Amino acid sequence: MKRAAAFLALLLCLYWTRAQGESGGLTENDVTQTEVQSEILGVKATNDQTNITPDISAELEELRDMVIQHSVELRKLEQENTAIQARLTASEIKNAVLEARITASENLVDELETENILLEVRVSSNENEVEELQRENAERPKVAFSVGLTDAGQVGPFSADITLKFSKIFTNIGEAYNPSTGVFTAPVRGTYYFRFNARESHDTKLVGIKLYHNDKQITLSFDRVVSHGYVTVSNAFVLQLEKGDVIYLDLWENCSVYDDRYNHTTFSGFLLFAM
Image (tube, rainbow, N blue to C red):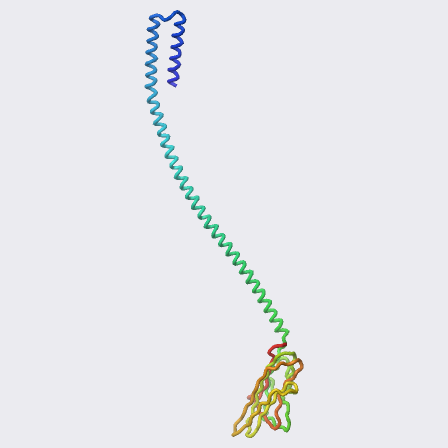
């Protein structure tokens, strides 16, 4: 502003001088006046320049202070930005870790669901197998018997073979054994197990037992008592029978057998499995 004022004053002086020249030239007084004005303007210009220098220094100092302040603020902003970036990086790492954990958890859930499905399938399969076994067991006939001969003591000898009638019933599941006839009748086609045991305790006596399948003799088990002792014979067989086949024991002719409350002479059998 001060420079602009000085410049305007100089222009005014020039305009006035030109006007004086056009009107007939300058007089000595005019020249003197002009010189005085020039000196005045020179003094003003000098004063203006003198006044401008402190103002520029002040403005430079102010600008420097502003630059320094801005630099400080910029540095603070950069530090804050660095801290924010570090936080963002840490957050990104945490997010990546959380995503990895979530993915692992989801995979674990999927595995558990798969295992659960497999377990359900196995349980269902096992339940079906159990039901099938229960149904087969319910449908399968239950056949088992175990009987003793008598409490009366000695039976025999006889002049011909006789079928032994075991009268003491210990077990007769399925009622396949008939104590009145001494005959076991197979209720179903299948594989059966049979066992017998016979004893004699009189001197010089023979004990002989025959096992029959229908009319076919399977075995003859016999022995003789000597020296005031006793003998025991026994045997066992697994036989495949058709429905209606019969199994029974015959006492061999001229032989005897002994039984009492201690059940020395017995006959047993049961169904292994149907066919």
